[in-house]
Length: 247
Image 1 (tube, helix red, strand yellow):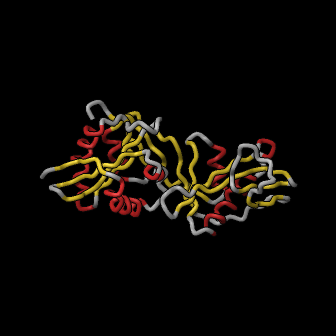
Image 2: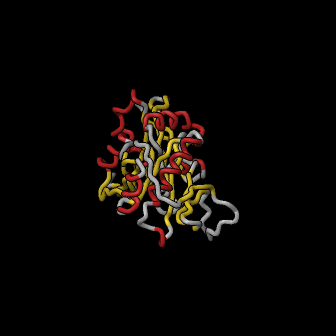
Image 3: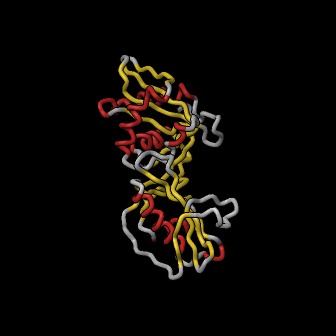
């Protein structure tokens, strides 16, 4: 049995990535890294047969390649995960492993080959239709006349004629997901506007044929409460660890 790992262009692993994303069945928050050229991909060969792939990127700088963030083997060869992964570590010389906890294979590798493991973000999926209302509010698309400063969000929430919150949908993730982002201006916080604009952004996502998803920093209690109120729930965590000495 000969295992060979070769650096390969994205097109060479695209079919394997399709299977990976199908199995994940969730938003993959690092998906855009491939489209923007922020990652290198590797093909795993067993006696010349394609059995999986991996990907590395820079944990702090986009030009670095110090972190494994994708590792996938097709089901008939998944029992070889602990044989191929150490070789992948050695070849790439990476120092970190990052993954989503709902990616079970790479999560297993993280806990086997890394230390100082911690969660950096909470991942959310939509589970409930809500009917949040705040009297005097209007949700609409941002217009050219709106005074939003550096905020180029596509949507705004207006309260009594004043822009109180803004947000939008990031569409550069794996289909069919749309990533919700929003902010509430300080004078209007703690009035239920965060949950309301998330609710309306969810509707916009479904209206364009997308599935809404979101994430927040692991320590951001306010954002977590807002997302929960708008009918989303945690579906995983963004995990990171340092590769153990000697792999």
